[in-house]
Image (tube, rainbow, N blue to C red):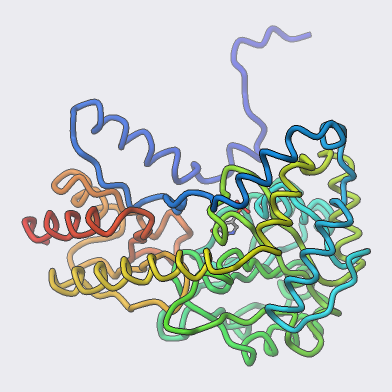
Length: 392
Ligand SMILES: *Cc1c(COP(=O)(O)O)cnc(C)c1O
């Protein structure tokens, strides 16, 4: 055997862009060490606690020895039933808990693994840019390639399928979409979903709709499910997460719903990789889905107040931003003379405010920065105050 002096990572890792938040975390840590009071609007991790009733259910279930064994990979029957009841109630979509619902160790896990089930070497995934980085990473890990669909403001941050070259569409097996959208905070209506279904049918592409923010919305707006639209069940699946809806990011619980054969593929990949979700966590998830939903309303009201404070504040310092109908993000145009990275650096160095450069979500995110409304109102006011003192 050759004498290997260096440990080299596989190309699937080295070919990926550096994980955005790892880079940011390093710079933040460096400033913190210097004693700077950082206001972190960078990472979309809810600051509000998991609701009490969910914690109490977890406490009970963790003491039950039945929950200590290997769980079934597809999720407890009771969890899948709770997810389908929630779906019926929220979207009017009927799902069979046997085969049309699959538990996930957080939706990120399912999104990362679905390409293993459907991407052959060299096949394309159609991936939004800017977008959640996992669509691309999962595709690359499966040996595939991403074709990036730019999301531009003039089109309401919806992809334009006419711009996908025919050869690419023909060799694509997956299409990722995500509305309400991270990072642009855009929303999509049923007409757009119908267009997605047409396109997917024409080229035999599997649609993966990431609905992580379906419950974070404002001003009475209720985002639709992809599965509400005629024909969606034939072409796609939808990924849901309890992370953002119930402030459970650390618990790792989500689920995928939709087309039975697509879910069987994802399930088959998963049986070879993981062993399901800790059952106590699934029972806590049942409590989350079945219990009183007023906690979700209160949480949205909190984000809505923060949104209003921040949008007004950003306008007052001359920045261009739309007030979003959903998600806890603001997608802010960088002032002229700057790009995403130079503006983020300026704001970090001179105001101690962390924002995420838009190009970290893909090339088409250049010209924007993302702010997460996951800090208290008072801190947002402080951030605006600091921005008033710098010139850009
Ligand atoms: C947060 C997030 C997820 C992942 O959530 P999980 O905690 O893995 O369930 C998925 N998609 C988007 C767009 C997100 O922002």
